[in-house]
Length: 298
Image (cartoon, rainbow, N blue to C red; front, side, top):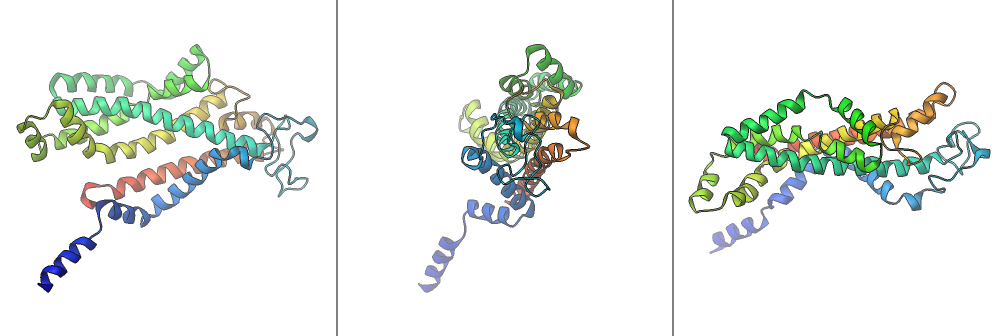
């Protein structure tokens, strides 16, 4: 009787899959460091109105080009200094994080939805469907993403919505390739065959059997696509065809500060370091999620 009770107690105490996953994530340095930096940036962007002492568009020509507070001539009123129009650099950095994160998240969601759908149907059905999808992927891979985005945004006109839509429809191919390969690996497994045998519809099989098993790969590609979208947006804004002034954008801040690079290098270094940290954090998080969600570690 006591042996039976011990077995039951050990079964009850056994951690569930979500607790095991959380333990692996907390034990992975990349996930912890990348996640911590990304969470801090997200919180800073969300609470920008509370953290910033000045508005991102508020100008004061009498205070233009003030250095950060730790440099000679700096002031606690402008902890990161001011730009050439006297706007608070700290405030513009926080609101610029909103723009970068918004573009990164929404672009990844749009491209992820398109690419995951195409990849799953190509890998599951094969044949002509697979040929058509791979033909589209081949065409997309032959087109330079930045140049096409530059041309389209230049023709249509730069705006936040335009950049999101253009990048969302240009970065889907990575999702399609990864989900197609993963779907082809699992489509012949027993649980798929069992679902087909009991009469489950194809949409239900794709949604409840295939999608959950490719989701870990999708999450990894999602993080990498976010980083790519943020970098491309910064490049487009730097060239003057992305998000338009006076909207705070890290690319615009770098572009506006480049004329003062030799005498006021912090105008370029501050948004550049912010861009580096965010992209690095997203890549660390993506690599870590790939490691902890790998099938052999489940």
